[in-house]
Image (cartoon, rainbow over all chains, first blue to last red; front, side, top):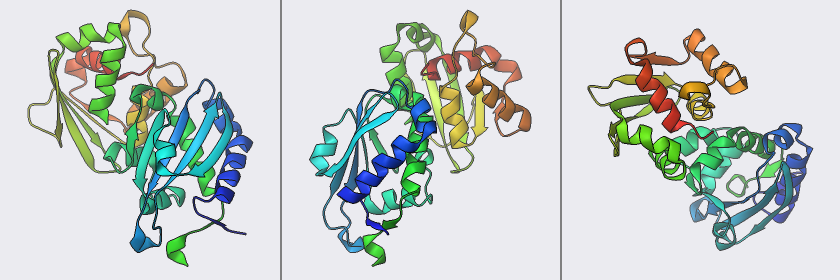
Length: 140
Length: 123
């Protein structure tokens, strides 16, 4: 059954997918920082308020993934910001996250060399999001 | 992002500062799968990033987004040369052989390419 996009149920499934992934477990070894995803509001897409996904990632494991406010996510060591529709494109493989960052479609804050070093881990996390059956608000 | 990456690399790694201070060259990077590119204008201690490919480039790297990221993950080994025998390096070398990574101006500017690779590398 589909879960609402960027909801607490979605966060739980996302965490489970990340922790099931042997690719992430290997690629994420040594990572010890929090990552925040800021999902900017797009009221015309039925996503009226910004949300923040806070990911506590450590050494190849997702210790916790929660959904809160945008400011919660902005306190993380690394912050990636994009509007709701952009995140939807990433989650549905319409936009590759790496290309998105290079094009400036996903705004990245944090130590760039570190995040580039872990490109494979971030690619696998994107793959994990595509494995979740999501109900998108603009498709209701 | 590429300009920011180089800036962060140079600021955080002393060993890259000498390369950055001495490099004078225009290097183009064209990302084939997004059809966008930049010209990195290294001016001996300053970097100006231009959108698109500007004239009088010494080197032009043409490849996909994933390979651009892999180039920055190349390890630097003995004598400051990129390592092409590990997984990342083999992948980059293979792309070069397949023609999926093209470096215009490579043969005449190998030293410049090695310097740029060292500055670009996050390893």
